[in-house]
Amino acid sequence: MPKSSALTPPPSRARATLLALGPAFVAAIAYVDPGNVAANLTAGARYGYLLLWVLIVANAIAVLVQYQSAKVGIVTGRSLPELLGDRLRDGPRRAYWVQAELVAAATDIAEVLGGAIALHLLFDLPLLVGGVIVGIASMVLLSVQSWRGQRSFEAIIIVLLAVIVVGFVTGLLFTGLDPAEAVAGIVPRFQGTDSVLLATSMLGATVMPHAIYLHSALARDRHGESHEPARITALLRATRWDVGGALFVAGAVNISMLLLAASALRGIDGTDTIEGAHAAVVATLGPAVGVIFAIGLLASGLASTSVGTYAGSAIMGGLLKVRVPLIARRLITLIPALVVLGIGFDPTRALVLSQVVLSFGIPFALIPLVHLASSSAVMGEFVNRPWLRVAGWTSAALITVLNVLLIVLVVGGS
Image (tube, rainbow, N blue to C red):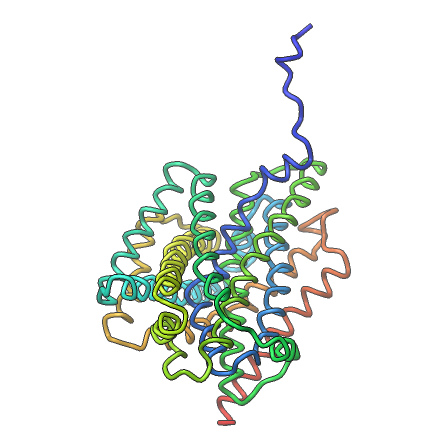
């Protein structure tokens, strides 16, 4: 009879859940990238608490979407791009890949720009030089994933997420909020075309298409393929905690950014840019808070550009069945961001516009995800329940309507 010490008892449910956490926190980096900083600070500085409701709705949708993405990866053992690549004919598959790559490019521009701005704020480096440094640093981070595995990569990203939280929440502790206006900001409404543009930008920055593609790959890579219903059920239970915790953190950071701008930066000239907002933070809250803010922005740029490259690789591998080394892909996708920096385009404006591009890409990722997660042929006994199907399709419709509204207002010149 074997000794009792040689027996390995199964982990408790709590411990098993804890060990399964991680993929959602990597995907959540997409929700606190420099594009979020630009969109949220601009919205708060221009309109105060008016668009707070957008962040609340977007974060609720994000929880729903990211859970379904991870669920598809866990149940099928395939990423969303792989499932689409298997189902689309060659022509539509390549066209779909093009739009997904455009979204990934817009993401990368925002992330590199944000890191470059942070280095400029901290060390007065030229933006182009900062962009190159961010690109090199992201290659180092990606090499960890290649050499040490996903868990080591997740650990580094989670540390950077903690830095981001401190960087963007600290300033809020030194400002005075207006509770009545904050509560009023929960009521959905707009104030002209520009507020719709910003709302779309905030939505694109919160529910990001590349995070939808990525999370299914992260869950699959972390947990592997399983055909045991009991194990899948346990992983899905852990994933709900993973997604809920990660998106709670990301949502709190986004809301903190808007509240900071609404309470401390509204009406101050230049605060609708990241540089101007930083200057105002330094002037009103002190240089120490300004440094913490800039460090948070730098962590955001470094983490998000690495995660974005990972997502782009998953998209290309699934849709084109072409595997490009992460470092090589990082070199190629760095070029558009450096071009934007080199020609002197307003970086904050570029960040906001990049998030609008992302918002238009959301339906292309979200509609197939909801369709596949609601298909019993794909998901078997783990197919979405009726309420989750309704919620998923409602989210897709809401985002699509907002995008159409933006087009109508812009074309009509309202």
